[in-house]
Image (tube, rainbow, N blue to C red; front, side):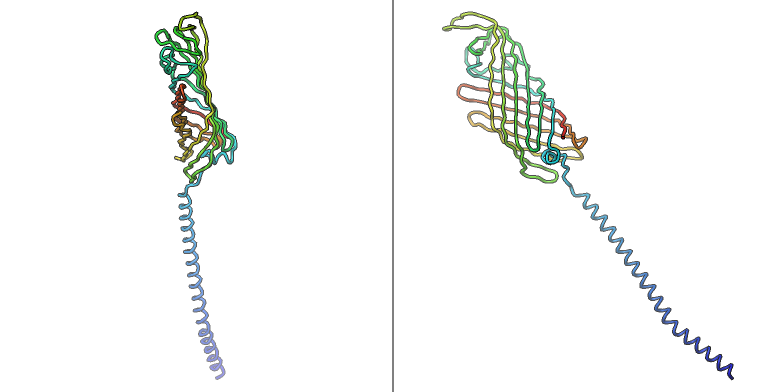
Length: 315
């Protein structure tokens, strides 16, 4: 009887233990499921974050940021000094009339290229020095020619050149300007400038000359006479620059001053630049310098137009 009672007690205890363990197992299983769901949620969140980051990176890569080396004004803020050397190959147009030089019989203007047979195309070395937003530009153009003036004599400083003559022509151009921003975007800059231009041309004629007194020939001799002109002229201008690709930029610039009935001066150029390094760029373009002076009995027209190429180094 005692053994039966003991066995019954043990069996009831086992049933109770089983009954109490079942809720614990269910709780544990529920906890595992919840943990799995949490991990799944965290994984999804991480994936979303990765996709969001990728989208942000792609969006950022599509935004264009200014490359300072492609724009002169931005470059000047970090590298203050620049030196440029250019090879300018212009064609010359030159016509003058003044008390110093004119057609002898008619008093009309002299076409230096046609009348004096001057070579109208020559090299014009150019140097440009820049400091921040200031620039100094110097060009020297020199050419010469020989002509027989028997049928078309000219007067230079009261001497009549009416035979074989040699002419040396020099043209110096010095321009100083200061550039200021007008409109800037990451890939485009529009600037304005103001400054002063000084220019001087000199024609030296050597040959057989006649001196007249009271309209009659006094004597003939071989002479060398010089006629020149120099003037400072204020100028204002605009310059547009654009980034056109990796390490490439293009620009267009014009400066000058309309003088109404007294003439005009304009200096314009187009150019493209390639930047193989942060402090060096290689440039090429086309430039026109056009000057016309018409004052009282004096007239002068000088035009240099042609291609140029050069290199610039920043410090």
